[in-house]
Image (tube, rainbow, N blue to C red; front, side, top):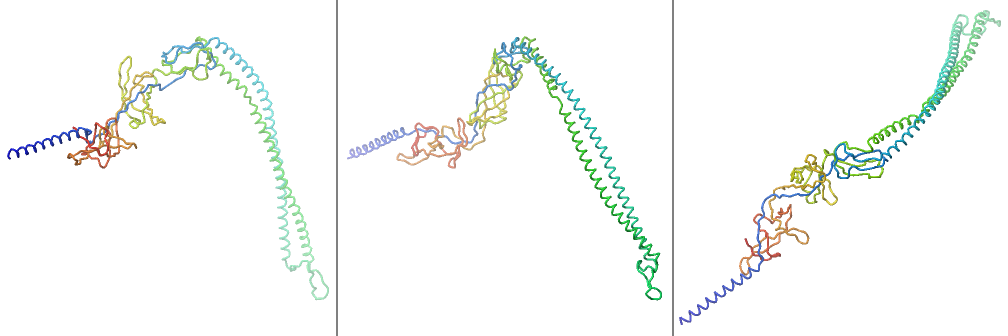
Length: 497
């Protein structure tokens, strides 16, 4: 009995052992099939953005070599990209062509000399006629001014005499009228100089009271009548002489204005007779003299145009056998001229560079080997695609034209609270950013870790890190950094150290 019980207990223990082993094996197989993930916690840090580009050195100054237009080029002493020194021959002009052109310009100059002489003779004759006409017009105007002033003075004197005579008559008339009035006031008149008074007897016999007084009144009245008639005539004379003086003045002003206009016309004709052809011929002669002198200097130099300073040819504008244009025959940059470095930055890099940004310049020369300098961005030029071209002045750095230079710069951002490695950041089909975080749950086999999607806003990022922003994100949040498989929402994962 005891042996049977022991056998049962032993069998049960064996069963439990087998079941435990099976559970462990099953759990191991289950765990082995889960995606293995590593986690990271967001940390506080700033981001560094590396800007890198390759640029080339270009000329900052270009000058032209000029020769008179229309000359045939016989030879070129330099080609594009060649270096030259002061005094080197740059191009040669055809000497025979120069001599032929000089002869033609000499002939043209002689023609201008003859034209100038002819124009001066014609101008002299015309000036004499104009001077005579102007003098006569001046004399006519002065004579009209004198004659008119004389006639006007005489008319005004007649008017003044007429007014004086009228004033004299008026004064005489006033005197006679006062005398008559005084005579009437004398005794015996009673204000009736022409009435007859009754006789002393009171009969029908009548006789003048004062025959002498009446006779004097009549004489005074007659004198008054004569003076009034004379005054009336003199009033007419005053009016007539005033009108005559006004007519003389108007006529004088009209004739004087006509004479003045004739004088102005004569003066304008004398000024307008200026012969510009003579002076133009002189100017053309002076210009031709300078051209001939320049061409002769070229002929004496066997047609060569020499460099006035050392430099490098950047462009040829004429070829052998062609005639020189009226622009530069070649362009060059002096050895001590400005040097500029141009480089192209992408749209993303452009955000971290501005005017005044310092950049490291790395380049290599044959004589000095690898070199490193610091440059400052002096100009930005935006491009249609959002990229920018940056310009730096490298004049004092000893770089050659065409030198390839590597530009580098590092831009440090502000301090961000939540920064994770860029490998922890994912994007969905809508280009929205998210991370996987761990969430703990109880499962069949006990406590399990599950991956959950958390959408975030990316504030900034570089090649290694991204600064995130989310209300659900904290420094304690476990963010999945790597996974052996592609994860899905709510997927059970295995966390490994």
